Length: 450
Image 1 (tube, rainbow, N blue to C red):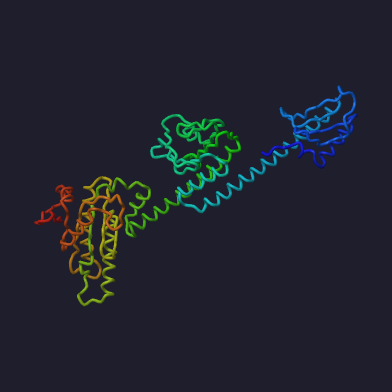
Image 2 (tube, rainbow, N blue to C red):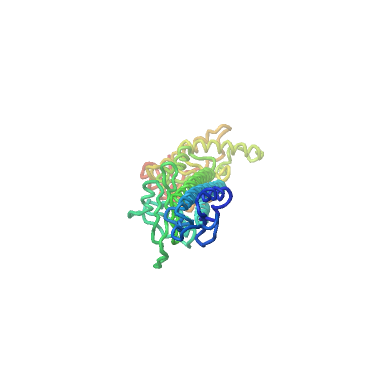
């Protein structure tokens, strides 16, 4: 706040009012500032030298000027002090209003900017740099709660190259703010840089709170020698609230994109129950060990003659694909189709790989039966089916999601109307289905018979 000086007070109407009061003092009055500059002079103070005195103009514990004159001039000094106090209060109120306007402008502009940003890290950088700039702070850091809620991880920092991780294992200001959900101000705190003491400053920690959830904190430190008050506490709290809302919006948007990408990745043909489990994060266990079924419908001849037209082939193939999808989905498969005729079905099951393998075998035989009696006549050849054990690819590559896909495709290529499985599937069946070993020099295979 700029300091009010006596010279500024004694202008215009204020000066006229003081001169009217000073004129009532017999013998003359002179008003001077602390530098000895005469601001008001109504004649020279006269009378006995002992009767002429200097009366200080006291505002609180400060002396802002001198009134020279007889004893009656003390009333002039008190009157000036009263006017000075009132003017200081008006100036403080005006500056507080201006400060609030600036704060609202900052929050409005920042909120408008954050509404257009959907990257969490970029939001954090914008908030800490705005906090440092507006408060002339030494450092501002935005922390998010880490995995396990045992520490705070710095997402963005302004005023330093990096910010240390903050442990939540021991009692601290940050832990207290996270637990209570209320911002706190430490007016005097030692400031250091490495082993070097920089002096004393202030610190504000405000929670990133949305509803009842506190996801992190905004921590802002003043420069050495600066003491913050409730005004800075309110501003940092507001900045933290704006950043929490923006981050929550960005995370929600990211989750929506993830769900959309997941739906796209597993394509159009999926088990509805698995989709809901996957989007809700409940499907991980069912995918630990699963059976992968590969069937290429183009190898069946689809029940049309050699001289059939292209349109007839496409129509027959489409009908066969719809039939196959109906069978596979009814057996709880999730189906991936890179093309209309090549179907890859996976059979997750939360009871383990044996249940997945049995479900895949049942689906394979049901598929053959349905296609054999499909409307339009029997197929020229029953489709061969290959089944192998698969594990999810943690890299999430779209073209080769399951490591067992290649093995299943190889088995299907030599199946010619049969259901062939790899040794893992044969072992999992454990006698529940008849499995006959095939002589293969490169890799063992088994034919499953009804």
